[in-house]
Length: 483
Ligand code: HEM
Image (cartoon, rainbow, N blue to C red):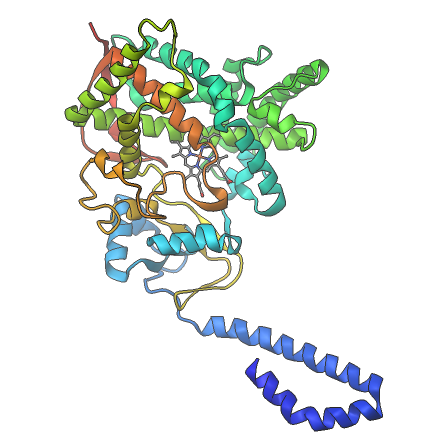
């Protein structure tokens, strides 16, 4: 721009002469000059970006990149060793895509919050087609904003308050069905979180055949990581058929609600609300999407809560005492069951859940894609490259959490530094369901610790990733009612 000023200064006597002699011609000349200058300026800026170095790191073998190194070991060892060698920002190449991995709170803020418009969420093609292209995860801008508002409306505390006793009934049913059995914790937790998910979506809708919907969803989820080949016999083909069945179930429910002109405070009610109603297709994609986002995530955290409580008897004792004191406070009041207010009297239990989410970091990272060439800290992140904020590295960095491998809920007595605690992400795509997730975990832990005990069966160490971090084999346990 400085050179534009100098050029204009040099040319100014000629321009003045030209202007007074041929005013229209000279105006066109000036406009043309400015336009071409702007074009050259923009080009040189992008060339300037091109001159920037890429972040340090290695891109590995052609096409394969470093995929084998990543998947032949615990992926966190790969991230940690790269971070140790190259620092908080490094490049690599996995699953056919060049990537930049970031692990400082500042870089996460840049990518997920302040310059989120430069980085769009990105998923494998099969996931996009199975969940449905109109699901919230795949969008930016106005449509995304509208969907977020509708989801948040359904799971805001005012609404959740009215669901506490129904969530409690579901927790009690699950726990009762485990009594005096050996169970796989994660598999059982998935049933509980599925039921809570359906409750938040459909309320207690009497027209819904929950079991039929669950069966179709289970067929669908088997294809999440499959090749998107729609030929008879493939998982993907079965998933596409299951989507149609789910759409048919939804269509019946929508008909009933429309005929009765029912206004409901559940998620479907929010999607159908008069002012901002979604199309039927958009509703199907987003309901499948919310089941996907809410079920395995919450079930994994709950599984880790059981694991860390049994590994740390001191905290199990303290949580049990906190929960028993709530039971005692209610005795003689005539109040039956937990209320929203009760869930706010569980500070120690809440810290145990926070610490569980930090240490377990069930989502080790997330994916974004640069929508244009971006400069960050003097490095170029080229357009089209994937950008992975590494949540687990941030949660396990001693700079953010001293003695990070120690399970210590008391560290949450003070708020963590900004952008260091990200179990629910951050920015415009952060988790809108976090209040619902916390509610269903707290209600579950209340009844778990006041009425039951459990012991872990088989090997107690080891983590599996699929894709969420989980205790080995989903944590098999022996589950007993307290006498
Ligand atoms: C403990 C359980 C949960 C965890 C750890 C969790 C974590 C996350 C994270 C990290 C993100 C952001 C991902 C990104 O930025 O790429 C996210 C997004 C999302 N979560 Fe959750 N989640 C949980 C439970 C739930 C529940 C119960 C719901 C139900 C409403 C839900 C609905 C969503 C939706 C719809 C999004 C996409 C938001 C958007 O793109 O704007 N999640 N979740």
